[in-house]
Every structure is written in C-alpha cells, then in structure tokens.
Amino acid sequence: MILPGGTSAATVKVHLTAEEKTLPISAEETYEAWTYNGKVPGPVVRVKQGDQVEFTLENKGARPHSIDFHAARINPGVAYRSIGVGETNSFTWKAEYPGLFAYHCGTSPMIQHVANGMFGVVIVDPQKPMRPAREYVLVQSEFYPDVPAMMEKRRKHVVFNGRANQYIEKPLTAKPGELVRLYIVNIGPNNFSAIHVIGGIFDAVYESGNPANAVRGVQTWTIPPAGGAIFELTFPEEGSYPIVTHSLSDALSGAIGVINVSKDADGKTELVP
Image: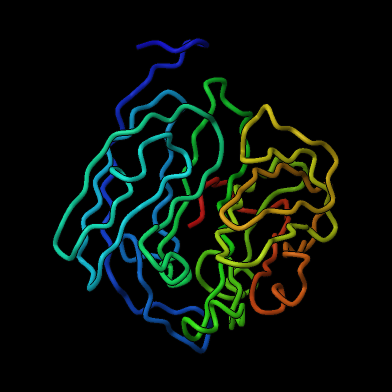
C-alpha cells in the first residue's frame, strides 16, 4: 500500500517480554524493577504513520502483566487484557497518528506496575519526514519505596531513562548550530513535568509529537503524566546546558541532565536509551 506523500506502509513485528530485574536507579542504589525486556524504560518502538504493528507480549514475570499502547485505537478489553505467568497475548494495531506516545502496563493496580518500571515510548514518524537532527529520547518517571508511598506521592527519585542524574554523569552531546530533537515522555505515575533547557529556547514544541501541533519560541513546556512532546532547539554557542524539569524538587531528586555543546562533539545521532 502506498500512502499519500509516497511513503510505503509496512508491517512491523514487535515482541516484548515482561520480567523482573534488579537495576541501578542511582549511583548508590538498585531496585527490583518490573520491566519490558529487562530495561527501564522498555525498548523504543519506532514505526511510520500507516504501518501495521503486529505485537506480542510474553509474560516471563512472577505476576500478571499487560500493555497499553497510547498510539493505538483498539478494544482495550481484548488487546490490553492482563495475562498470567507463562502466557502470551498478540494483537495488531495501526499507527494512524504521527507523534510521540507512551506505552505501559495497565494491570491493576496500574500505579504499581508503572512506578515499578513497566513503560516505554512509541515514535510514529509522519508521512512527510521531519528534517534531520540529533535525536534523543528521555522518559521522566518516579521511583517509590512502597505502594503506600505511591498513593501518597512520596517519591524517592525522579529520573530520566530509569536512573537519577545519569546525564550529569554522562552528558548528552551536540554541536553549535546543530538541530537537536528531544523526544520526551513523562510517564509519571503522579507528577507533572515542566521541561526547560537552561540557556536555551525551544525553536518548536510539538504537543504529543504531532507536527500539526507546533508551538514556537517556548521557554518551558508542561507534560502531564502519560503525555509527551517533541522539542527542537539549537545552541549557537559552545557550553554546558542543563536540561531539567522546572518542578525543582523533582529536578533535585534526579530529573536533571546536561547537554554538552562542542564543535568536537561526536557526529553520531542516535536514540537514547
């Protein structure tokens, strides 16, 4: 099938495994995470608008799990049902809208499955490609000591891509004048995010990652739990530019990083994680 704009649709097969794994969430601490494919966040699923996604979830964990794709329009009672240990669930959905979407476990209590690490990102590239850029994916999330703390919003860490302060320890990179595109999802489960780059202004922000939703010249953008946006910016000068949630107690709990801008930056452009 050929879509308008000359982009060919494809069938994309995605297989995720639910499993528990001990992972570092800070320089000093590990966590018994519930994961997709042993990672927090789970793998980035990237498709094109119009693609058919043939999806399978395999439960190798110790409890029931499921998945909810915010990029899909589908009967949740069938596709997003919980499956028991050792079971699988398969379904097909179509990537109708371009943008940036969350996926997560929806098994009750959902807050526990999300807070323990069962989430990830779907990028649906538009039919008309966006201009070339250095691209990074950041997922903001919260870690809690126990379920009562989740319900009372007493988070211990707020992190980008599963680990507190990791992009201070190992900054992102860019070159002066280079277009940088940030795919940012806030999975929560509770807190709003207020994305800001210190020393920068967003040339464009695309709500839910949809190119039709462009806002220009933005200082700070709010992302609700389970929401996302694409951010584009350039850095005219070399330097170290912090990226934070401007909900500052969350930033100081680990949701902070640095973009090092240098003419000697590596020329690779790749998604993180």
